[in-house]
Amino acid sequence: MQVTRVVSVKHVGDCTVLTLTKATSSGGSTLGFLHGNWEAGSYVWIAVRAPGLTINPLKGKAPPPFSKEWACYHPITIATPPIDADGQPAKDFTLVIKSMGAGTWSEALIKKAKLREAPSDWKVWCGGPQGRLSFALEHCDEVILCAGGIGCTPMMSIALMAHRKKTASGEFFYPPVRLIWVIRNLDLTVAFEATLAELEKSSNVTLSIFHTGNDDAGGSDLLLNSHIVKKGRPNFYELIVSKRTDGVVGVYSCGPRSMMKAVALNVARQASSPKFLLHEETFEL
Image (cartoon, rainbow, N blue to C red):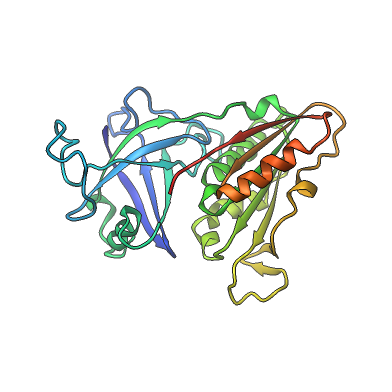
């Protein structure tokens, strides 16, 4: 595990947003045992040092630093792609960590973020990156990203990757992408505001947001910070239908089990042509 420099810390609603750098001043990497590169959809293992932040089950049972009280590592998906807006290898990466409720590590992280300490005062260790997609976007003729809640983190990274690859490469082929995001809490959009703003300008990524919560939004669609948010649950069968009659449609899914089950069911209901591929990104809360 490597010591990783924190670039910025933000507390946004019930999320902690950490931006870290993988590069050192000497040109080395602070990310990863084996390498400092990641793919869209990859995750890292992260530990944050703070008194009382967590209780490590390996305390006293493993060699340092893994035996330290705070050295409890958590898998967090990288929310940004491995290339920057100019198509160059990214120097920084962002983690959006949603609170899982009172008494959890993620809730303690929010409390630490509220202290407004300088980024240089944060001591963070990262391991990885790990995880990869079961099929590449470049192997598809069309891509559909289905996300529920904080399960959007790998999908935001994939969508941004597709947008930036297409923008940077010009004529280079990259498939059109549809991102479908289902949320209960509208505040979650704020944590991804910069990503959403960039995707709105994309020529090959279209975004659909559905709100299923009981906020004060009423029963109609609304405009939230220039994003059109549709009220109610999506009809995945209609949304997954492709106008293509041949080729390959890649569907990526991450979110609550009920949503992922609905996506898988409706992928199975599609016609045999075009061919549909399904990648499911699961996580335990």
